[in-house]
Length: 289
Image (cartoon, rainbow, N blue to C red; front, side):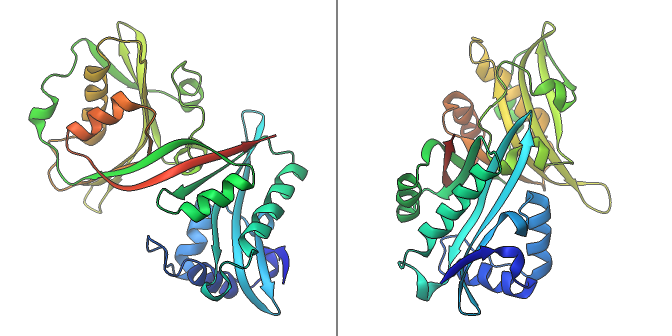
């Protein structure tokens, strides 16, 4: 068995090892080639940064990596590690992760991140042994419909304004350890807004609205939401922001919240109280040099 760059494989081999590597996974991530290529480009997971374990001429496992320089610091992300069923438990995963960590350091990476299903204890334990630490737990939440009455107690005197991310990212309460897929740099069509109270910024969010061919709202995804937790009226501020994001008056609309950090307990409580339910839980992990 040898580890080599994923770029040495054909796209058909990459697709096969992706789907076989996730066989029996708790979440169905089976993809066709177009879906896989779109995902690779969208998330910045390029073959030259990624690795495959080869048994003869057959791929036995993989790790997809992404590397970007953001605000003068190089960040990396393990965007998926999978081993084909018959080779699990043979140490291939450990070798792939170590190869990736060595590669990160050669590339001058400061911090590397990954997410793992909260129920996948073997993977989490392996990542810990390799030097990663859990920095938070993440919830993926969904709501089909929302009741307008749940927003009746929102704060008064608030206004909202779309602002460039270059401004938003420097707010004192902007998230720092953001999950890779939730970063503005990876969501080119995401839009950022700031909530103001008496001209003072008190919250922000990053979201994306999906429209159908008729121009009607088909879905909304919230990627980031943070607020000044020193405000006494933080719950009302959060409700105001959520109302702007999810438009409860729109009935047939899919509403998703991606990778919301559990450390934001007050905001998460408001989110659940207005009708969102957790569909998936992950751990957020990182390693620094």
